[in-house]
Length: 304
Image (cartoon, rainbow, N blue to C red; front, side):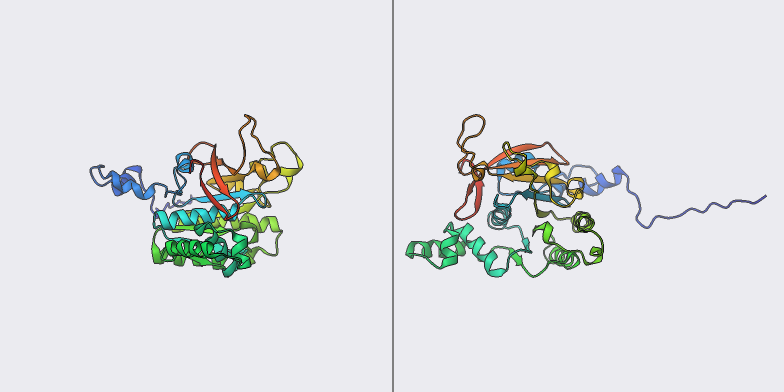
């Protein structure tokens, strides 16, 4: 008769009891509540949005999605401005679509509130120049870092790790998801490649313990089905994994863009941007109204 020998295996990553975690987090007596702050969300600078989401939670993947011209880039640039100037939070902004000059023009228009077309054309009067100078003065020393030369996932991931190692805290913004490439998956379908990109970004957020915000496009189903043309989770472009993996999904919808001048209650939609929290793993879904200034591409609290 064969005798079975059972050996005890030791896990490389030891399991922790809840008691162990609470002791580490709150101290031996469980009274160090301030330690919980490091698990709280960072402020976005949009209080009405933070009341719904709880802020930008660390280790989370946050997707900002919309149809073209709704203001995805403007929204994340406005977010960058809030984070770096209002709260001095280091922010890495990775743009795959724009070069340094294009991105800088967008940003200085936003911070100075000078019309972007005037800046691009160099058609500035003295008031514009003074306003531009004052705006640049507000942000030139802010902890905003721009990267416009990367598109491959592994290079982006390494840039994020380097940012974490240097600043320890902060927020990472990537604009946009559909233009990221994953060389290791390019022999597969584009959907398979995008699925892998979304999953790896989610794991990266968990690894570096920072919020990663990525913009995403929405497919044409929004405009072809008519009605109010508001996007749903099923409208995310190119990958079903976005809906499955993301911790938070925000949709930007501007009815004014589609010629809708009044909402169902008869209120004017002028300058109205509806931010729909369509998915929130740690809270409820809801709509938030922000104001959008199209001339300088800036989002603000609706009351301001």
